[in-house]
Figure (cartoon, rainbow, N blue to C red):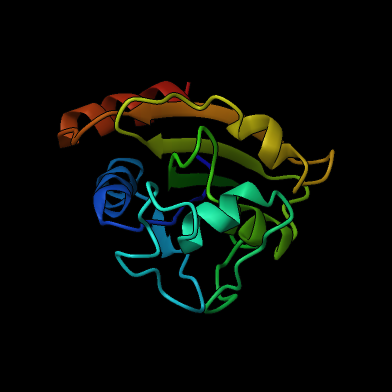
Length: 160
């Protein structure tokens, strides 16, 4: 069985909850992707076109800085990469994360949390941040909180 890292970015705690349950389900290691400058509630106000998250998401070249670059990518075969859906795609800090490490020969499977959206543009937007020798796949988008059994079932489905 491959060694799995569950890496995630969570602005409100919803994705953190999902990532923790998923890490338990796959018996993987857990790593939180943290911005160098934490997001405030005002930063996350998607109704305010001047909020930090709105400005970042309008600019596809935006790459918010990471608090650290301590993820043990080299020590894992598979990375389950989680994030909330923002503006029908992954937050640009996920691009920062993917561009900060060498994922050559790795499989990266996406999982996301969302109020109602699906992956939409996430896969296409994130493929630009990894090399051709990285397998990048859509996994699952969850709406609301899921119990441990849900994550165990999904873990079994990705293990084949």
